[in-house]
Amino acid sequence: MRVFAPIAAAGTAAATGILTALAPLAPAVAQSPEPPPVLKVHNYLPHMTRPEVEDFLTRSDMVVIPVGALEQHGTHLPIGTDHLNGVERAKRLALRTDVLVVPILLPGQSPYHMGFAGTVTLPSTLIQEVYVESVKSLIRHGFKRFLMLNAHGGNRAITTFIVDRINQETAGIAVDLGAAAAPFMERTASGPPPDGPAVLDRHGGTGETSNSMYLIPDLVDLDAAIPAQLTLPPHLEALVPDVLAGDPTALTVFLSEGLKDESTGKGTASHEMSSTGVWGERDPREASAERGRRAAQAFEDAAVAFIERWNELRPPGTGR
Image (tube, rainbow, N blue to C red; front, top):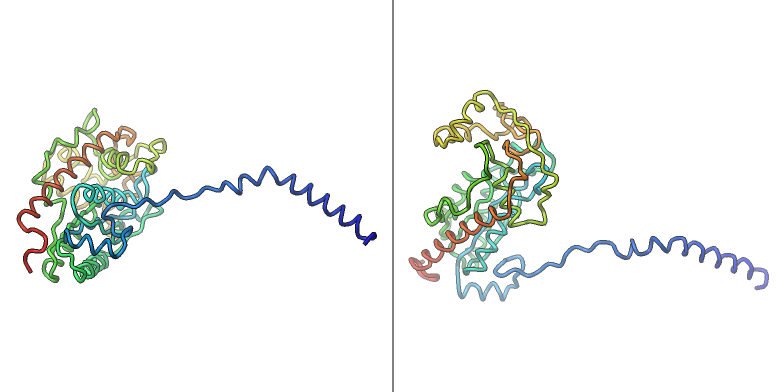
């Protein structure tokens, strides 16, 4: 014992010295960041228990399903902009009227954004199948009416087809909520765009940035926004003045060719036209949360008006 005592003492002293040296590092380890707590959201299916779903069905048979995307949105907006904004809009509806919010799928159809990292795209046929089959599951539980809330321009035709398939192939009744709410909306309710000359201002631009600043403000990094340098094919560039002047034919032709998969050879994938992925010439930093609030409120009011009118015309539980 006497032989090993000095060694033990030396070892203890050494260990003490090491611990002392590491002491400044201890708080950094102990204070590692924790994800924020998950707060329960009203009428949001992923947060609900089975008894809560059963109770909901005693009051309503209506479901709102956001149809979003996972795609690049420039240097300042998250990849999940379309999905997240769509879900947030749906949640706000559920706070005002009895609809069940059911997010089904994160990605959408976004092949033209694959030139920028983070984009996830799925074939249109697969997207349709996922939503239609999911609706069939909900119908088995007693849900009847489905509001498809499209939050991504590239899903517009897909959403129309999903609605038609639900109506043609199932016992459910589906509508495109954007189209259904449109007659209830005032065109000026969202407020004017930023001052200055009219310029192209679409994907990831001031409108989408304003919406995100209101709906998902903590995920917007406006300091990272960079004005895009655009290089459009000459024949599309020639259409821009008519598009900005409000010519509906010019806009239809412009969108029919613009933002298409690189494999089509049209030269209009986002990385072929934009230095940042934003499809617009206006500085995204001109966006405002107030503009986003006006747009969100206008849609919400119109959507609730449609839902309430549908409930008047066809109260829950009526029909086959």
